[in-house]
Amino acid sequence: MQFTYTKFRLAFPVTGKGFYVNTQSGKTEKTLRTGINEEEVSAMSNLIQILKDYDTYVFSHLSDEAQSLIESDRAEDDPWMEVDDFLQFALLDSVEVPEKLLRDTEYEVNTAWDEELQLRTLNWIQQHMEKHEWRT
Image (cartoon, helix red, strand yellow):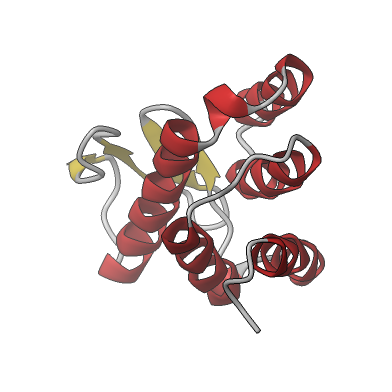
């Protein structure tokens, strides 16, 4: 499943389906086209929540350069790369990512990500867990 993310609009370009999401609550507000199933809505809501959590717990602790690169991922509507960059730069800047957020991210990455990015992102998660001794 491929979809793009912007601050208030999510779209599924392959199917041409789209809907608006309230980024505060993660709930669907307005369906633009019919045919979006609950699994698609749930998957995107999970990703939005994960990104909000990275903003809350990690973003302000990153270097200015890292913040700039993450903001560029947002401008390019690439939420998967944004998550990957959060993990990479948090390691480089020695920012601890909460264990629950790592586990939520790991679950999300294992659902339907591009295989190459999935492996790369799972590697970042593993490095965080090893660094903070959450996984043996």
